[in-house]
Image 1 (cartoon, rainbow, N blue to C red):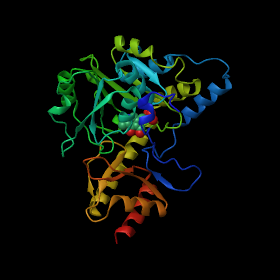
Image 2: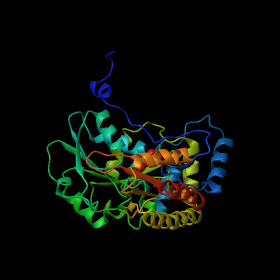
Image 3: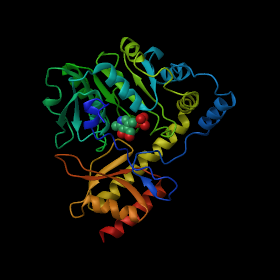
Image 4: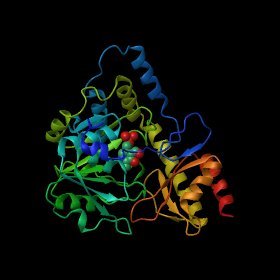
Length: 349
Ligand SMILES: Cc1ncc(COP(=O)(O)O)c(C=O)c1O
């Protein structure tokens, strides 16, 4: 069988975190929001269904872009909507990167970046984070055929943030566009939205999967200068966001009270989780996201992951080249985190 482009047969393909269906596991492995979405979201999706689905949806999700534009203080022409922010990453990569070009991203970070580069037949220029999770000069160094850099900020799995000032400097020095992947920025004290107007090369992607509890709906968006949005729009599927997703996502960002309430709960529980993990002897990286990255000097992460799973709690075990492996624990409800800590305490005894 040799129908496929050689880079497709050569690549492994992205493996998403486990999504066990119909089990009673406490699920703390893929950074979902532990709270249900706002009731207004379900009502809006219901109305979209009632209105009938026989017509194609608005190809540019105008209602969402207007609402998001008001919320974020940007013109709707600066927004492109996607079927999750992964779709945004795909569109950008397809539009900017040719076979043989180079894509730069840090390690450890979001594993999908490698897959996107491989699909494109591009070369990966992987720059190691410094031990303090900052980025050194290698991240901005000139390189031939460098066409795109990705930066998850907050980063996954560390939950750490590079300050907007530092990102501005990185973007100024980089010879190519920089996609600041802000899937977790709603849980952070800072974000890079303000850089988009100042530098054409800065693009910011956002997700409704985590902070708005809509991972199952699939909705994300990009904020970039309109001359870039115009080009990216040529690459996307004509109807990449369905009518229910547009209605639900618009209602979600329209209910900031629900958003602020659940966000505050998650941030409070995150603090408690970090404190308890530290008390149990884990090394934890202070997180600005809805998860905590940790490992224990005396207990291998992989066996803890396995034992936790047997005890009914699913966390994410991750290992990266050149780095210690570890556990990434999503911030759940207080009850879920209590269940996790109870089992963990037993395992360490
Ligand atoms: C860093 C990062 N970016 C983007 C995404 C994709 O999010 P979605 O496609 O659900 O919006 C994820 C999901 O886990 C992520 O961790």
